[in-house]
Structures are given as C-alpha cells and as structure tokens.
Amino acid sequence: MLADVITELLEDGADDWVMLGDVGAYIRRHQGIRDEADLKREALTVINLVLAAGCFECGDIVIGKGFVPWNLGREESLKKIDTLWDKPFDRIIAECWFNLTDAGKEEVRRLGL
Image (cartoon, rainbow, N blue to C red; front, side, top):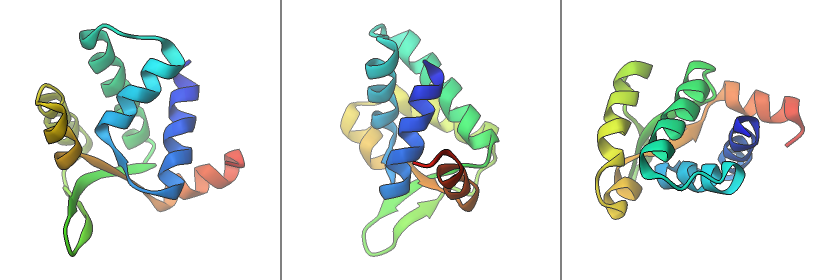
C-alpha cells in the first residue's frame, strides 16, 4: 500500500538521509511492483505526495557539507528526479537524496515512528 511506502520513507528519514533508490526498494517491498515504468511512476507519485506535504526536501550529499538542498520547487524537483531515474543506479545514489524537514519530523512524532 502507498501508506506503507510513505511510512517507511518517513521512518528511515528520521534516522538519516534517504536516497532515491530506497524509494524504489520500498515500493517493490510493499507493493510488489517490478515493471520499471510502473515503479518509476509510483515513485514519482510517492515523492510528489511527501514533497507536497512538506515532509522532505530534495538535494545532494556533498563531501564536507553534508546535505545540500536543491532549492527547487516541487514541480522542478519532480522533473529532475524523472530524468535522474533513468540514469545508471550509481548516478541515482550520488545525485538525489531526501532530507526530512521539520514538518516531516512532526509527522514522524504524530505517527509514533
């Protein structure tokens, strides 16, 4: 279920930054989706929901700086992720991370995660 994917994303985000590839892994685990096009579509749906709720921000991990936000709007972030998804897996790891925001931390507390 979509709620299970979002819950795992929030739970993991409470501990550390989450990479784009993890979102796909959560979807495979909870929804059993294997087709790459369906997986990408569902991942973009999940990401759209958590960005719209203000629970996460997108960015990069930079050596010596840590998480560096993209400072893009939701739509621009989704377009960038849509493009990144089709790159080799090692590029996905390096180029797209999610950081839990204060609103996300509040949602984690609310859910008792």
